[in-house]
Length: 298
Image (cartoon, rainbow, N blue to C red):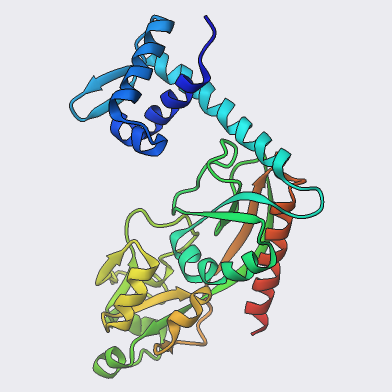
């Protein structure tokens, strides 16, 4: 008996969501309809696909095997559909873009209207995630990574280099003084990235620069969100290293130690080999390059 595509689609949704209820919401089906489809699939295969627990569903070994294949098949189908629907003359269709929450919120999101004005046939889906989504498994079509990509099978192009700068609020600096040398940072409240930070090399360099030997520089607060760090600095909590791509969010803050040589953040545009000839990818890459050129010549 051949496998039913509809049942496989439901199975894949349940496997990814971990529950009948959440899968039903994404498929616009009732929980009972989803449950019936899974039960029918298990009966046709004569193997259980899920362990059912009070806290949700866990794939059995057979379920894991089936889901690996199904995920691959649906990813390839989505790619084929996108390639078939993309017009020969102009970019069209859906483009899934992933980048870090900080860069996506502070830099990319405010500029997307320009891209959509120029390319109204393209639908952009932005996935903000500080973990690297797997482009080979089509979790996204393209990525803007703030570190050199580690996957060897991806096309990558360095598109920008950003500077870090140290900032504090006028109120904080009035109360605590302005550091004149890197060693002075030992006496200041420092904000750094906490756990689950984005994979950016040396992201917490402020905790070490100019630190006196044997004198630990304890951060006042650790926050795992660029937006959270910016707001805390504005509120006078302490000093933080911020990348220059946050732009307008720096207004009202005071840069300290401007002569300090700081690390740079390199940005890369990354996509899988099979997207090489996609017009959507090409026009989005060109848009990024043009916008980043403006940033660095501003």
